[in-house]
Structure formats: structure tokens, C-alpha cells
Length: 130
Ligand code: 5GP
Image 1 (cartoon, rainbow, N blue to C red):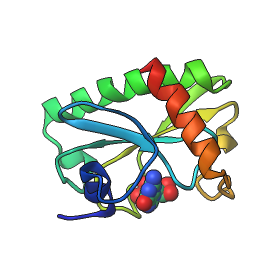
Image 2: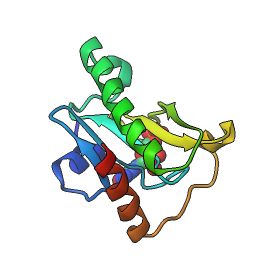
Image 3: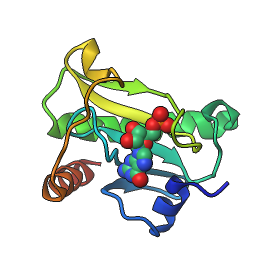
Image 4: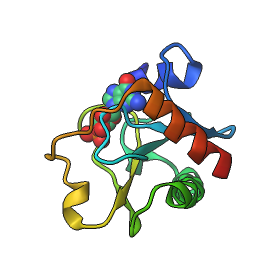
């Protein structure tokens, strides 16, 4: 199914890209809970994360781990929180959110407003660490 994320993968919609390989793609969430909030997605257009086959699901988490380690090098935080929600965009994705407190990963919280320059700066710094 064509979604906003499949268009991002194809480059039809711009994003602040962090990393990709032949099966997975990572980019900054446009409405971040924190600086460095990143989405990791499979290139396969599958809606529900638990419809991924075991190998893809496991490899996606390993890819997300690599992204999380890169985020942690750039964004000062205690941990990288991991969440799967999936109620807005019907394309499987893992949220990686730098956190110091449980409330930092509260999706009802007001989102940050960052300038395009700041998004680009964060994406460039993290992607170099990937
Ligand atoms: P969920 O489906 O997990 O509830 O939320 C989808 C997430 O995707 C939200 O955090 C939202 O900000 C993000 N998002 C939605 N559309 C876009 C987009 O066009 N670009 C980017 N970078 N993020 C998006």
C-alpha cells in the first residue's frame, strides 16, 4: 500500500534522512518528541509491524539498534526509548526517542518545533555516526 512513508523511501517526499540499507530506512520524525526522534521503517510496505516475517522483524530491530547508538552519541540523554504506535501512518515503524524521563516519550506531549536548519544539522550529525 502506498503511504507517505513509501513516498519518503522513493524520495518523492523530502525527509531528514539518517540512514538506509537495502531493506530499512531511518529518518527524523517531523513532529519530534525530542531532538533526534527518529523513525525506522522497513522498505517493504507492510502496515502492522507484527505482520513482518520473523527475519525482517529481527533485522529491523538490529538496524534500529545501530541507529539508536548513533543518536546516543549526538543527543545527550539517559537512554534511547523505543516505541511502536502505528495509529497514524499505516506503514510499520519504530520510534527511537532520546529520553531522560518516562514523560519524554509521552506521545500526548506537545511536539517540538524545529527549524529546517536544526533538523538538517541533527540528521547530518547522527548519520555520520551510523
Ligand atoms: P504513529 O503512526 O506511530 O502513531 O505516528 C506516526 C509518526 O510519523 C508521527 O510521530 C508523525 O509525526 C510522523 N510523521 C507523519 N508524517 C510524516 C512525514 O511526512 N514525515 C516525517 N518525517 N514524519 C512523519
